[in-house]
Length: 217
Ligand code: TZP
Ligand code: MG
Image (cartoon, rainbow, N blue to C red; front, side, top):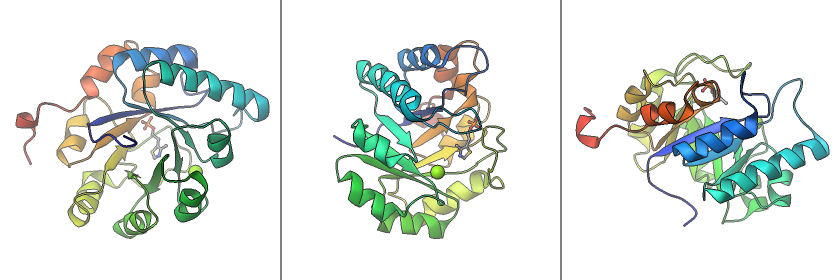
């Protein structure tokens, strides 16, 4: 099945995301720790390009395959098609989602970043599989991040589209993750909480959805 409805711990990383450990070591430890999705998001001044990016992407993909975790690429639709990635994630400033869907076909996951009910509606019409909604909280990992939408923003989209899989993103930590789960998300996406964790396995365990009975709506 292309899409799993199991609660998602969606890890996002680029070659520069971790301050201490090497990126492939971080990724493999996160895979061992139980992440359910991985997105390669290569951004910033020292971002890899060309063959260096291709090689890095292939190494990440190989690791993900070893753990049967979907390997998703941010923005770079051609690269995703070239190496047969499992999915693509795009933002509002990228190509229209329907164009990307047309290019990648029906078997790859398509995620779209949204910040409002209206953007979520368009993402659904354009056949996105899930939306990334955020930033939920203040984030230091995205230079052009919008104002935090808070838990309120997630609840608003969830109320309007109860069946839409929503991934909360932005400033999520083991301390605030439960609030995000309580808002009814399908998953939570993080960069720094995992990339900079001293004990990545423990961090992932702490981010996971608490037992349903503990969730008070
Ligand atoms: N999109 C919205 S916030 C964000 C992205 C890519 C960054 C999330 O990083 P962190 O470190 O989990 O706040
Ligand atoms: Mg983008």
